[in-house]
Image 1 (tube, rainbow, N blue to C red):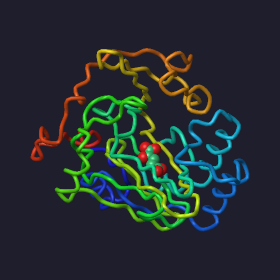
Image 2 (spheres, rainbow, N blue to C red; image 1 turned 30 degrees about the vertical axis):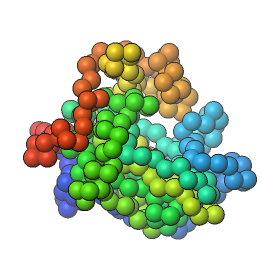
Image 3 (cartoon, protein in one colour; image 1 turned 90 degrees about the vertical axis):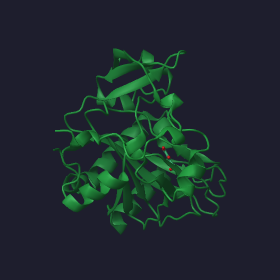
Image 4 (cartoon, rainbow, N blue to C red; image 1 turned 135 degrees about the horizontal axis):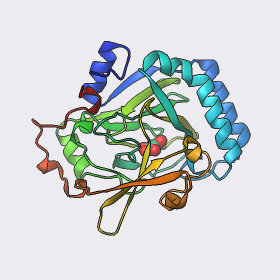
Length: 282
Ligand SMILES: O=C(O)CCC(=O)C(=O)O
């Protein structure tokens, strides 16, 4: 059985809940990351939510990748069992942003029948429900099947959040500066508005098992998926163009897959029979 976390208790919690919260950066690290963001971007506040992942400035993205690697790698190696960083980014919610992220699941980056990819969301200030905090569907990763693209990533019915709340399965994540939530990439999550007068800056890292092949999926008009292998990890620094990425020379067509998640609704989910957690299949 492959352990994701080196610590047995954390591994158990992560397997059960789909996430774990860990201390990640110290005060000096956090300041370095905030300075890097502020010295390379507009000091004037913008609007809404944005991420450096979609920036056209390849040099800035390289700088972000290198700095995140320098500050996170040791901690990640101590914490996780044989993972590598696929891409990194800043996630920004400008002041007085009423936009919130509804419950969603991030795009598929590996074959999830064999591997567990993880998303790290690290607070660069104290985070709560007033300044763009994250909420999750606790244990929801056990009910998610199927391939997801960067824009088709909501394998659950629209009213799902109400039902998740009713059943007491939503958790609001409160983080201290430097703490991170490490989520199974299949964990449904969202984020609250930022109703404060300050810009919220978080650090995001997406990791895959060291030996995993990375993939990116695209949906065709019949709702089936074409799966492409990423043949160069540099793709995310210089090549990613959302749904238009198919033309990139850093992707290679792999297979067509039938998808079945678009018909999934919460009522169809049999709570007693969630899918088995991929990394626990020996
Ligand atoms: O940073 C946030 O507010 C939420 C980001 C998020 O949910 C995502 O990138 O999938």
